[in-house]
Image 1 (cartoon, rainbow, N blue to C red):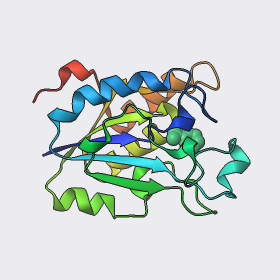
Image 2 (tube, rainbow, N blue to C red; image 1 turned 180 degrees about the vertical axis):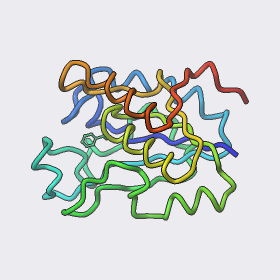
Image 3 (cartoon, rainbow, N blue to C red; image 1 turned 120 degrees about the vertical axis):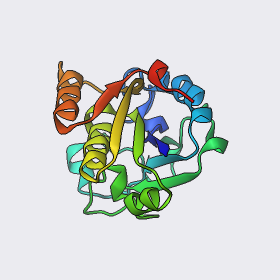
Length: 181
Ligand code: VGL
């Protein structure tokens, strides 16, 4: 069985947010169009405390309970089966969705018969990449849907390097039109 993962499609990672992917909001309609093709949909939220080691590296973003931490308003949230919060502790980075606190996601997916993961969301070079590589390590057949992810591209070439790293790790990069169902 396949599942869709929606990584951190939150206001702070979209234009106008605290740590925006320049075109972050473009993923929203693409993801919305995919929702009916998946029997199981998990979304993550970066959910940081006010003070965390994570903010030594990054501008303050996705602070628990703030507007910036909310999912993008146009995302069809009613189709999401579970929401996983991550990066919740002050000594934690929380890039991979498998580090979320609410459930042991790897176990939950396996218990539900999931063997294929389709990854979407924000941002390509960090949480998407870490989640995808983590998924391969945990034995899932892992796809990243290229129209459904966006990067921040802090340095020119970062997004390309992230794709190469994911492919090297065994992640398959696909187009949303490749998905049946
Ligand atoms: C992310 C940078 C810092 C992400 C989170 O969601 O990809 N990127 N924190």
